[in-house]
Image 1 (tube, one colour):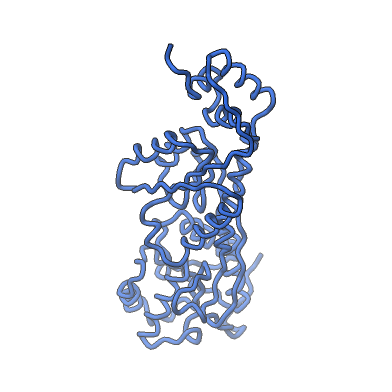
Image 2 (cartoon, helix red, strand yellow):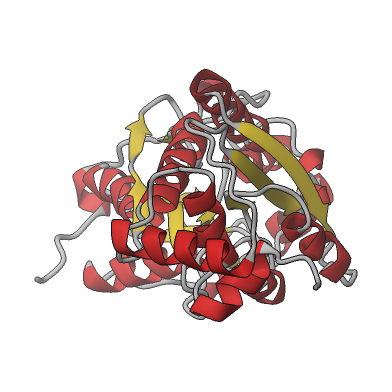
Amino acid sequence: MPKVTMSDIASELNISKNTVSRALRGLSGVSDSVRKKILAQAESSGYKVKIKENTLLHIVMVHMEALLDDNFFWPKVLSGIMNFAANQGISIRVVTVDSNKDNTASIMSIDNQKCDGILAINDLDDRTLRQLSELKLPLVVIDYFSDIINCDFVVTANRIGIHKVLSHLIENNHKRIGFIGNINWRYSFQERFDAFRSYMAKCNLPVDNDYVWLDSEYKDLSYFRKKIKQFLPSENAVTAWVCVNDVMAVDLINALKENGYKIPDDFSVVGFDNIAYPGTQVLTTLEVQIKSLGQRAIEQLMCRIEFPEKAHEILCIDTKLIIRDSVKKLPEESYSENSS
């Protein structure tokens, strides 16, 4: 007679392998009625049950290889995850994937070892997320959203954040405002741009596409030099820019200074993230609760493991406006009140 596995029990009862595993290991998150059915099926099929109380949680963290190229934002997110996991006695195994390759083998390896849940970080493509969700394990995604994947998401409150920086610029009498950021790089960048357009329209402020640069290059001053030469000076130029992150904002400021412009006397610039990047000391920006993103995600995963039937949630981590010295208050005559 072939050896009975947890997968056999799961198939027989039409439930997930993770639920069977939790029941047989004596963990929470399985109702008494389901646990009894699993134990009964295990006994009748000849599966040897060894229940261990307070078993260590095993979590797999999945992210793109390119995530490791970042030195300022994602290391703090990962630090938040690792520190919280260490304090809670949670084991974390890391699986890296590549958007340019077939990741099936890497994904399937997750199910071949102990795994109670998965943390998926940043812009994994929908195909990879779908493969992860098909493992039928608790899944929480950080800093990305997909409406075709049924799981929990923990994201930055991008729309509220953009509302805060635009409100600050408008309070300082700016009405011609540009936007800079390559929206193809990150889900969060696209969301920030969508929020920018929406709030500008709500305030009846025009958006001049000459100063909306959505193809910007990362850490490439030559891109900004070219754009500045093309569109400045001009009587119709913007008085301020909203940048999709701090790195982009600092590069813009440096390129403007190279061309003789003063910040904020000639142009105001705001960023997003509040990272410790050279040049951000004077930058007005939005502070993302970076470590909280990671910690809140692992807390949500623990909750999902314990209560797998709860409705899935989208958790937004708020931002804080950090006012420094890169925004100038314009004379009131430069700003006319918008009709409501």
